[in-house]
Length: 225
Image 1 (cartoon, one colour):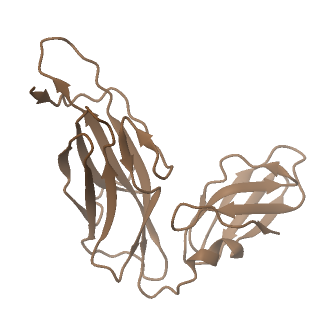
Image 2 (cartoon, rainbow, N blue to C red; image 1 turned 45 degrees about the vertical axis):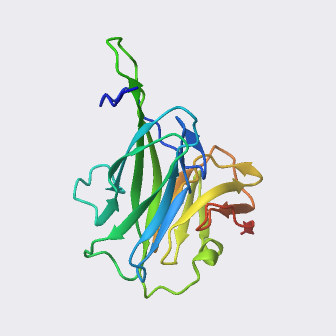
Image 3 (cartoon, rainbow, N blue to C red; image 1 turned 180 degrees about the horizontal axis):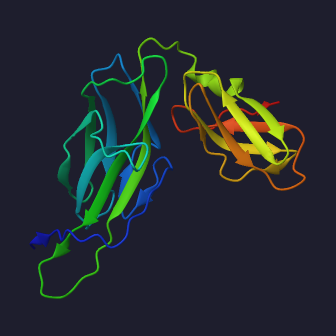
């Protein structure tokens, strides 16, 4: 049986859940932390299906969509065939650049999969699925306190606007955020040594509690202000 890969993108999907499968391909993590002291880091990509083969493409984008500059990472292999039941390790190598040394930098790691089809004259609809996870670059000089960074967030409220300040050199990704026991939707990520604002529904006020996502994709214990 001869398999063909048709390079037609019909729809894409982004996921950020550890070990979650989309179109048969499983990415072994919800985030990657690249410590500058390491020569490379690895991420597993597995095809658990019994009969389907995939073509997999991997690359790194800058955080902001408008930033079209080449990201300072090489991924090998960048394009490969992943047969049924097989697993591959993506090697990620930092190529150097003028990244800040006093705080983390963040990028998007993309793993796109496209299923193979049997050779025939019939028209087929193929769906390409792109899994996007965050890639954090952590400079060597940073202290090893990343796991406690979320506890240092500071909150202030002015009217219906909630200001979140992060004095640490680490990105803090919020898993849950509540104000007065009411959930804040899309709490998002707070940049290192930076601030974000969230608009709250009218009348939402009170004690603030939050949980963050740790380096391994798990959830931290709750913090309160």
